[in-house]
Image: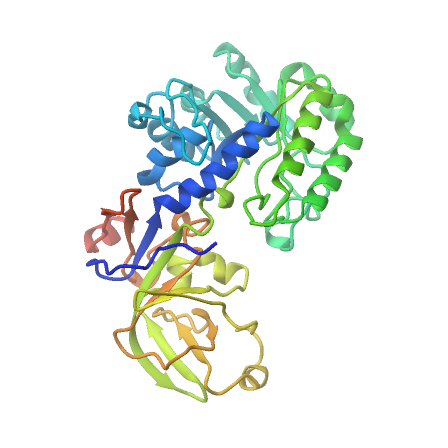
Length: 425
């Protein structure tokens, strides 16, 4: 998706994250359409994106949030829930024919954690509308407290298959701790739960792969589903792609729901904010070492950590406020020096400013050699990015800037030395 994230000059020192509410709403409309056609409910996955400064435009289209910790749950409750400040939004108007949810609709807060500590449970139950346990042992330990508060209980299931290209993100990896897979053990605790959560997709853009995977899940757990009230199929389904068969997905979900008499939940994270955020940086220095080198005032380890984790590169969305989509070349920065030298000598490698040797945004074929002071905006800087930002090397934390629906610019948050200092002790 191409957005207008960098079409105007913004008088904020770099680096900063720039979020575009119009691009977020475009994603919201696709999600709302899917829910409308399928009967599914959509919960924002806070583990992926939790910048609550834009929740006001997201809340009318989503049914709530899902969390992976007590802190995320509380954040969702306070900033997205039924009692949050955003429930006064006027949703009487539709956008592109998509009917927003009624502002009076109570938002659901789903609580999940790989492992809860005993002292967290009382507070979790203050905020949760459903609590999902990762294991039967956690379910056994805390189910009575949930029952005492009339909080519906769920259990995570692991079908031992997944759609994930990365072993680090694969919930079905060998010896996985993410959910229960033994059917007999699950059946034994059915009286204690009302639903289940199955999350086994990661950036899956294939409808057929999703449908085949769901068929496999049905074969394994179909008779269990018939005894439940709801199932969450998690996130990681890239249904916002322009060529994704959205109606076909909706019919598949609707048929699944009707077959088992279940309320289906989806947990869109990346799908909620894809294409809606950039990381805007400035070139601090340039060098030449068999290739053009540029060093910007940001860092992938500190500000776009998934690039480092998954050995990926960031596409460039704009140069000096001029929109220009430049994908990084398919060169693994971990390859040996001889392999890297085989690429064109006039390519540009863009480095972060941290001391990590592999702090590399990517290698690019640019229309011109970069100069000190040039401004670069890297795309896809919202999902699994802002939630992971850190103070590595004491590199300046990016400000958070929001382009509102009316085009105005809000500097939502800036960070300073005192916050760096306070984060350490």
